[in-house]
Image (cartoon, rainbow, N blue to C red; front, side):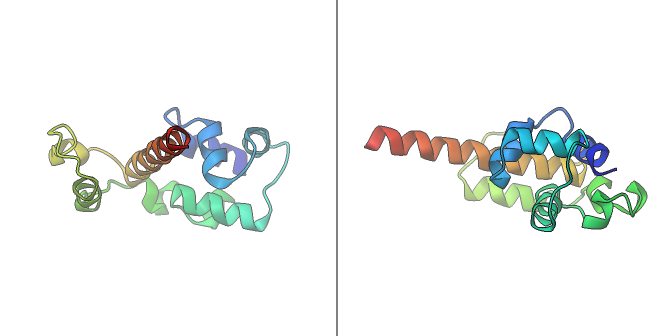
Length: 131
């Protein structure tokens, strides 16, 4: 069931509100998807798959976690490293590449989405103070 997949993918590090904000949904709508009260339309389903970096088949329970690259160890931490460098993050904690190797691809996707959310929040805050 899609709700179970969404709960599993969201985990405990991202809130329903965070995902709803990223996808342009209300928190209630996203909650209904997770709890099986409603099913997302095709456009939303595609957005959810993109957000979690999984296939639509995986969301619809048509493939197993064994075949899901989002749950496999993500060894290419250079992508995240480059993103951090590009943003001017030189903090040693973020640059400890061996620590990142324990994360799955889904973990790094969650970090990326959270980072994007923090950046967007900072932009909005800056825009309100500039006005």
